[in-house]
Amino acid sequence: MPSDTRQNQLERLRLRHLRLLDLVAERHSLSAAATALRVSQPAATNMLRELESAFGTTLIVRSTTGSSLTEAGEVALQRLRVALGAIRNAAESVMHRPTVPVVHVGMIPTIGVSILPRLVQMLEAAGSMPRLIIHEATVPALVDMLAHGEIDCLVGRLDLEDGHRSLPDDFVAEVLQGEQLRVSCAVNHPLGLLGTVTLNDLQTAHWVVAPPATRTRRIFEQYFLDAGLVAPVPHIESFSFHTNLCITANTQLLTLAPRSAVTHYASLGRVIDLTLDHPFPIGNVVFVRHRDADFPALEVVAAALRNAAPEG
Image (cartoon, rainbow, N blue to C red; front, side, top):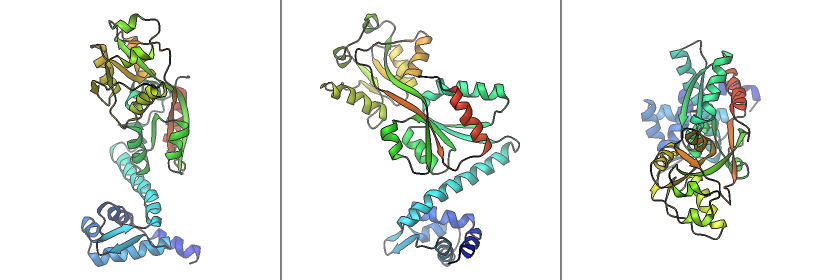
């Protein structure tokens, strides 16, 4: 098919065409997708033909058990979800404050006590403050949100060697700062009186740590395994570093949290940042966005983030 003909077909596609593919992937049924779109089954079938003609390949396979996306359909949907998310965000921006650009920023919770305050301060001082909508979640959840176009960028802890391989090819990641996990205790904890805390001290202590399957928990357990020891079973499992640090401040439990969070609570006199004879490895806080996401407000936020992140 000539390229100009294909372009004309693509330009005739509507939002409903894009939603059709998304709904089929979600509900595994073309008829269910038609119902959700409030169109007839023949109309949905015709929309599918128009989609596949415009893309020049089969996007959906139908069988007696339902409908599913082909590999080409999955690839197309990844891009279309970004487009749908961008349209939703654009509509929201214009609806509420048409003259102020909106940037949806995904971040892990500890960014809220380290980089985010400095980011806002810099944007405010420069007079370039966009409307920021903050989404807090785990890094895997944020990556999924970015892939679906629900956020414009994410800031989180990601290992360069492991994390970047798992990112989609159309994502770009840059390191903002190094981030080390630190162990802390209450100001009246016996370990706070020691100059250096040993592995044996940590193994026999009581802990509040992030749940299994989180990056922090994996690092926690691997830390002991690398030393030939069994990791202690936490007395409390909690995802929030802030919750864990507050518990630690008022109990005899230790916790593991990013240095930025521990430094914040230590500066308030709530906890002690312990010195270990075997420190935890240093990871990275990264800024991730789509390769082709280049609207001005996002560039302003990206530039400010580079300056807001402390060195080291």
